[in-house]
Image (tube, rainbow, N blue to C red):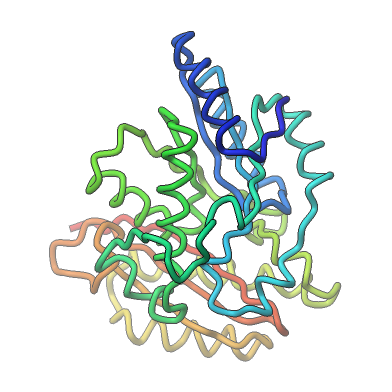
Length: 284
C-alpha cells in the first residue's frame, strides 16, 4: 500500500495506473475509520481493481473551530485497517497542501438548493466546504467510481448533483448505512458516548423505524407524526435537533406525486449529535 501526502506524487501514480488501463474506485474520508468506512472500501473493491482512500479532515466544512481541533485523528490505526482491506493508495495531505492560500482565497463549489436546506440551514457553509473538497479530491484522484455512505443522505444527494452539474465522468456508488447489532448507525461520533448513553442511543433508530411504518400507512399528517416522534425521543433523554420528512430526490417538501420520501433525524445525546435517516416508498 502506498501512503502519499504530496498531490504531485499522487498525480504521477494515478497517471501510471491510467496508462495501464486500470479503473479506480475512490473513498474520501476524514479518518477515524470504523466498520462503516470499511464497508465503503469493500464496495469500492468490488467496483474496480485499484482502490484509493483519502484521509483529510477538511477545515472548510467545520463551522466550529473547537470541533475541528477535537476531531479524532487515528492515522496509524486507520492505515493499518486499510492495509488489511487491501487498499492500494492512501492519500493523506495536510491542509497547507490542499489550501495553500488559506480558506479565504480558495475557489469553492456550491450546489444550490440542496445545500441550503435541512442540515445546511443548521450548519451554514458546511456543504460548500464538503462539495469543494470532494471536487478537488475527484480532480486529484480521477476515479471512475466513488463510494459514499447513505448515512449522510444530504451529502450523498449533493455529491450526485455536483457530479451531474459539472459533468464529471464519475459514477457515484451509494452504500447502505452500517449499523451496530443494536441498530445504532455507526459513526465516529459514537466514541464520544458514555456507556449509559451508548445503551440509550439505539432508541433514535427505533423511533425512526416506527415513524417510517406510520409514514407508509399515509393516514396521519407528517407534522403530527414528527411532533409525536420528537416528544418520544426527548422524553427518552435526547434533545431533538431536527426531524424532517422530505422528498428523497429534491429534499424539499413532500408533494402529492412524491414517490419516495426520506426521514432525517438529528438529536443530541449528552454533547454528541447523532444523525440517521430512512427512505420510505409511498404507495399511490
